[in-house]
Length: 149
Image (cartoon, rainbow, N blue to C red; front, side, top):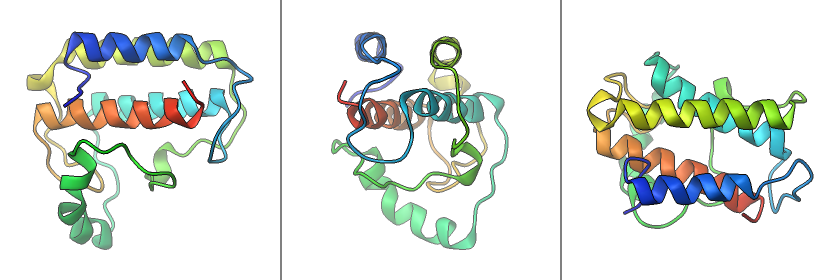
């Protein structure tokens, strides 16, 4: 399965991000490309900051049931829920967000599977380092597919 910790998979994602443009049309959702980049950067930053995000009770109960789907081979579906802390609705500058995302992606990969947080994912609970690499790959892929790249 694809992972940010597998160099060919990560490089393929980087090439796809290079194909994204400020005016790339979205296929679903509400974010424009710059907001999507900010959202993806916020998700990586949340993992790298190793901070505790709010975990509502219903997420703690449902998360373990959804984990096999979230980490499995099928791409995320449209409308997959995101923690409110990483929802981006304000205008963003595309080039700045692209640079920020590239920097955070570098940091994530350099940290490696063994350096992933001990704090649980807000929905899926505790994950191994390999599971973090898989999950973040799928998240970035989901948003690239959102814009057809």
